Amino acid sequence: MLLTLSSPPLFAGTSALRLRLLQLAAALVAGLPLYGVLGPQPLAWLAWCAPLPLLLLALRSNRLDAAWMTLVAALLGLLSNIAYFSLLMPVPAVALVLAVKAMLWLLVVLATRALVLRYRTGWTVLVYPVLWVALDTLMAALLPDGNWGSLAYSQADNLPMLQVAALAGVPGLLFLLCLAPSALALWLTGGRRCAPAAVASLLVLLLAWIGGAWRLQAMPPLSDTLAGLAVIDDFVGPATPPARAQAVWDQYARQVEQLAGQGAALIVLPEKIAVLTPAQAAVVQQRFRALAQRTGAAITLGIGIDDGGARRNLAWLFAPDGAAPNSYQKHHLAPPEREFLPGARTQVALVAGRAMGLAICKDMHFASFGKLYGKAGANAEVMLVPAWDFQLDAWMGARMTQVRGVENGYAVVRAAREGLLSVSDAHGRVLAETASSPMPGRVLLAQLPARARVTPWAPWLAPLFGWGCVAASVLLMALRWRRGQPSAGS
Image (cartoon, rainbow, N blue to C red):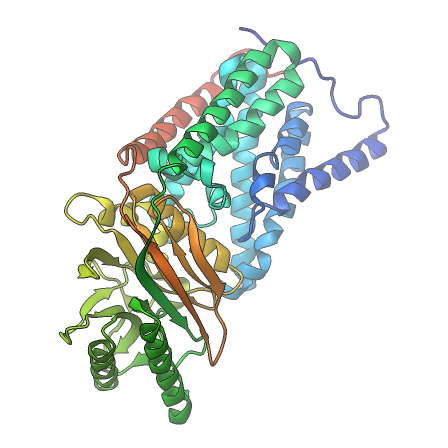
């Protein structure tokens, strides 16, 4: 089916100066909705239509104008990250990251424009989502921070659509999220002849929502098993006065006793409460080993150990029987802890009659890592995740971890310093949540689901779909650069 792009070029018939001013204004207007979705706290509803103005601009402008307007809009949208990025890296690095991300937008939008205008057929509605899924898949596999901030995570609180992650993971969810503006842009630009492709795309979205809503009907009720979380934002470092350090540890002990007294069978404390020498760590280990035995609650806490030659970021799980703790070493290290040694092993233990896995913060930002605990042999029912966020990314850090639970069918208990204390089930439902705080800290008590583990629909499909989009994008780019009839509007 051939499509005729019936919309005239934007601002036709205006003077050169007026044209540039109008185009600049249009690019800024197109960037405003992107500003609301490209940062660490995206607006879920806006993510479904935010790229639409930019796609319309590109399809109704010549190639050069489409390029610079895309850069202006993308950079405006990406500025929503500048405060967060500035916490993690120097200004030159922030500028470089923003420039690279803007170039990715340029690549996707211009390739989409070229293919839509060259082929003018209904299948081109797939170009925009396929290219974004391909880039997202490559970033997840190749970058040290993975696909942090992927637009797909904006839908973590949209429970019906989030269930797509149980079938096709983040790639499937991102595809649908990008399909919506692509279909609308094609429809608004091409007129009635492209309506069938657009309607078919929107029907797919509707069916995905219905399927997700149906899956939510099977959410299990809550059980009598209580999970407790306790977080104090204060960090115990080498420069912390001994009296202050002791006060922090004493407060954690009081919080554990309080939560256990309220019936918590398991208690999770945050990541890297302190960085200690092996001798100091042994004292802490003995204290919490005895505390778990006395209170009858399993306790998970994060600790850093510096033996003078290497540093390790660990999570200890103390069982109520007083045995030596299960120890897990963080795999994926955040930028401020690159000097720490990465771990390589998973850890699953039986707590309150359920298989519970250990992970630390950034580990759960990677779908490939999350699958290690969902596959046969591990079959974790609950993930215990000590974490340390950067305040501005509190929502994103918690929701990325929540999505891992949906992908793999387990509940998540995550306690983050400078972040959120949150408990979510295998359907992504947030069972309880509150923000952390400095001394005296914050505690949270939540019921775990009666059936903590849920079998995902097809866990093998997500990587297959993601890498399939990578292969398809190679074909699309080959079509983009193939010699042929010049693109309209070039």
